[in-house]
Image (tube, rainbow, N blue to C red):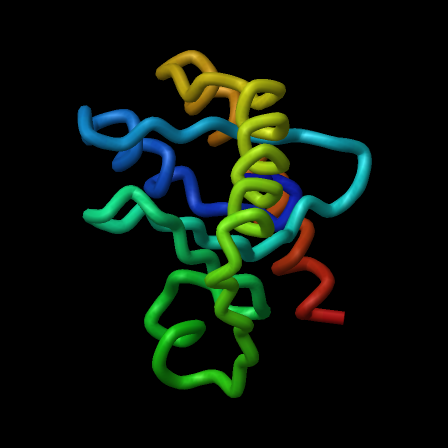
Length: 118
């Protein structure tokens, strides 16, 4: 998950509170905005989706989006390797991270609101 597009801190609170989710924050000097979803099926094969949709109500139901389904197992394994490389370089979400992020987020929101007034 990238933080360069002002993810609401509530998302990080929810992720930290949910013991069944392992999420990390990937921070770069550029916008990190891929939408790659990889699922392991009951038969241990994979299916992946690459496209423009966020996993939000708007992204999944209301916006005009385009996604591509990947069933080829070799390609799914390549995507899984790509994901794991980024995941390992990500920061573990901690309460300390969330508190620091909330400060940064409030500055971002303030700047956005100031720009909207102009």
